[in-house]
Picture: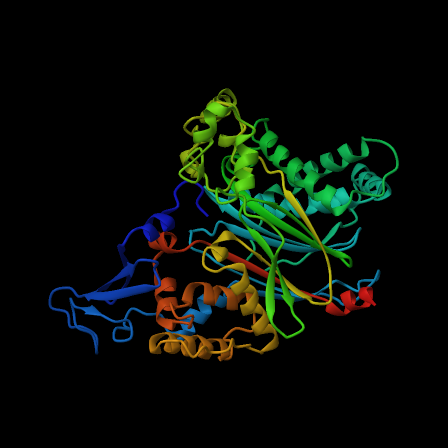
Length: 524
């Protein structure tokens, strides 16, 4: 998600947009996206002397069904959609009891180059539960990358008992291998700051030393307390690391990139009792619930922190003088610039003007800011910082037998579909059962045709075994009548890098399948 310019919103607001979609064999294809981008026309222009492809008329407006020359094939579409998918089965018994998670499926589709979304998953080894996170970067990918590597470890350490933390400290002090806090589930396509790993471990050690320094016996923080402390501590560490001298230019450059870019985060801990969610920003956690009649409903376990959330607006405005009421959030953005109202990093919205100037000036001698693809600046109407923080909003849900799966998604997913539709898609994908609403005898012929198209689309066998891929396919390829439009999907995926971000966002989805047998046992 771009925190600075949301081109997609601007394009959707226009009546019609024009962009180059593809270029192949010296043919230039233009796509007109009309209105809400669900409709489009294609025009094929050929160079002088060239002949149009079979079935196409050069220079004339053609329907996508007539003009397929620029379209990706079904094999190409599937290859793009499935490239980053992941499926992981969780052992049913982990030595301490039944696991609350059976398996999870995840996937990502980039619009930015490189992708600014990240995701993580890991099982806690010193405490109970499995952690999942989705992180949506803006202004670049650096902050999302760092947070995806670090935040789950902060949460896991905060939940550990004093005895376990003391063992960690003894091992670190004696140079021995540390007892692992997490079992990570990495994907072959995951990126890692390998040269920062030891530095991140040192900073994590500072966190557990601080927890030990409070004195007294402790059994570890509750999941809610741990998430709150972990979010705030990591954001504070990100800020501090950008201000102090580090051991190498590489670490300094990385720390600066992480601090001046930003990311939102939604983290869920699933244990034998329930689901704990910590959210800062506009990623979202949604629970899929199956009714006694087989129908599906969505229970949202987070709230989006943006200008559409009245309570978030009140919280933010209460922190600043009445004179700033109209400038704290303007044009639906923080200070007229940033869409999410909570985030990691983004020190341009947190530091004083003096601190920002001091840090940037100290870098100019040794670090080329342009080479970092980073442009620090002070937003307009910047009078009483900080305007932004990473404090999570916390939610808890006690597991029930009817709770079947959890969807974590970046806002690129939720921009394209609502929570109820996402749950229905995953639920029907899981069971293969498609419940149809009764047909009203008052429907007009056109409405009846649309309903039949939607029913046929819902009843069709899914193309993807992976439910996260299934969500992304439908997010980008659903037509006005609810049917899966292959032409539209292919056109969206064929957009070149410099244009893709104008019409869609990076999309990340993780679907966590819950162990309903465990919940059933607890209710007996």
